[in-house]
Image (tube, rainbow over the protein chains, first blue to last red):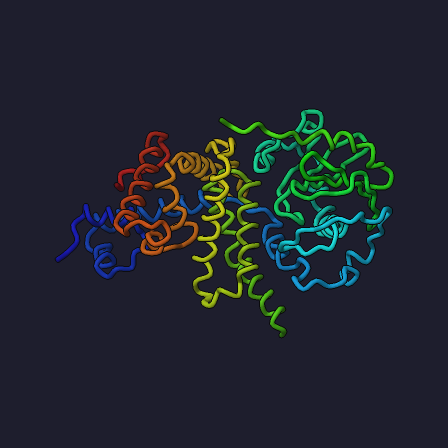
Length: 239
Length: 175
C-alpha cells in the first residue's frame, strides 16, 4: 500500500533523512511528492546553516588540554617544566589541599601552571574587549562583583582551580591588563608574592576562597590587593 | 605506545570528533557562550576521568551528550541564571554567506531561539548531533512517536514564523 501525501509530509517534517524503503519510494512517486522533497531539502539546508554557529578557535585545543593536567600519580612538582621556573618569594605556609582532577601540590604551582597554559593568550584575546557577562559567570559561585572592579573587566571565563570551578578574569587597568584568577573554594595565605616566567603574582585571601593577581614586574600587582579583596560580594540567597 | 599515551590519543580524537558539535548543541540549549564553553569543558573533564569505562568507541557521541545534558541539568538545579533569556544568545556573523542568505539564516536563528525547549532539543539532537529518532527517544526518555511529533512541530513552527517574515519562498507551504 502506497503512502498518502499527508503521511509523507509528516514523515518529511519529522525525519527528512529517513531511509525507510517505503518513504524513499514515496519520494519519487509523483511530481507532488518530488517537489515536497525538494522544498524540504531547501529548508534543511537553511536549517543546517542556521544551527551551525561559529565555534571559538581555541575550543578543541582547550578540550584536549583537559588531558594535559598533571597525572594522578603525584610526582615531584619539579618534574613539570612549568614548575621548574617557579620561584616562591614567600614559602607556602602549611596549606592543605583537597586535590581533585588537577593534582597540584600547592596553589603556587597551580597558578603558575594555569598562567603558563593560557594566561598570555587570554590577555591577548581580551584586548579591546568589554565583558558584559561578569555577573552571569559569577552567578555560578553565588557572588557578584563590586562595580569599581567590574567596570575594569575586559574578559571573564570559567577555568579549573585546585578545588573545582573558578573564573579567569582580565582587568583593563591604567597600568595595562592584569589577570585575576578567582578560586572560590581555595584558601591561601593572604598577600603571598610569587614570581614565575617573567611575571609576578600576589595571592589574595577573600571572605570565601581566594584570588591570584598576576601582572608584569612593572605593574606592582600589590596595588590591586585591596580592590580584589573587596570585589567578590556574596549574593543574598533567594527566598 | 604506552597506555597513557594511547588513552590521551583516544581522548584527543573524541575532542576533535565531537567538540565542535557539542559546543553548538550547548550554545543552543543554554544561550550563553561562557556557559556553553564551560559545559563542554566540564563534559570532557568528566569524560577524561571516566574514559576507561568507555568500551565501545561507537557509543562515544551518545555518552558525551548524556554527560553534557546531566551537567546542564546540574547547573540549573543550583540556580537558573538570568542570562538564559533566549535573546541573550549571541550569533556570530558568518562572513562566507551572501547578504540575502545571511539575513534569512539570521531570521531563522531568531526563531530557533524562540522554539520551546521540548521542540528545540530534539531538533538539535537530530540536526546538530546527527541522532536518529530512536536515539533521541532514548536520550529524552520519551517514545519515538513523541519525538517525531515534536520534530514535525518544530519544523512547522519555524516555517510558519518564517512565512510571517516573508522569507521562505515556496517552502512554507511544505507542511
